[in-house]
Amino acid sequence: QASGSLRFSTGSAWFGLAPSVPNGMEMHKPRENLPQYKTLQRIQKNYVVRCGEPLENIIPGTGTKPVSTIRRVEADIRKLRVELGQIAEEELLSQASGPVSLQKKNQQQELANKKDELTEKVKQLEQQLVDLAVL
Image (tube, rainbow, N blue to C red; front, side):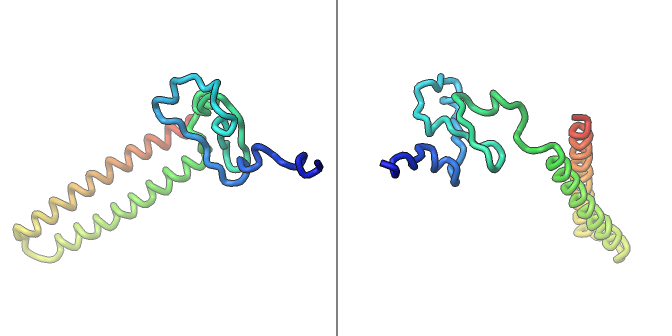
């Protein structure tokens, strides 16, 4: 009977079991009568916990570390600023290329609109970055 004592009922939970994500209807149901395997949820990479309700109700936050979120936002801002630089280059090249035609006016208008959109996105991301830094 030694082989029977080596069996683990939750052994598969440690190897690749995805966290149980209840749909909207199940979130409000009591989860008392659920089988044990449905109460397992993953925290970070190496931790699996058994709980009767969604982890969002138990642990506040999104689950990502604030530093990681800040780095992602900073990277997005850098990418958008590079795009803004390229648009400014295109604007200068189109202005220096000669007389203004209808097609060039349309192209310049599109570049100006793109530039405005990107500057607005940069402002939003910078505000998000400030909010994250305050936390």
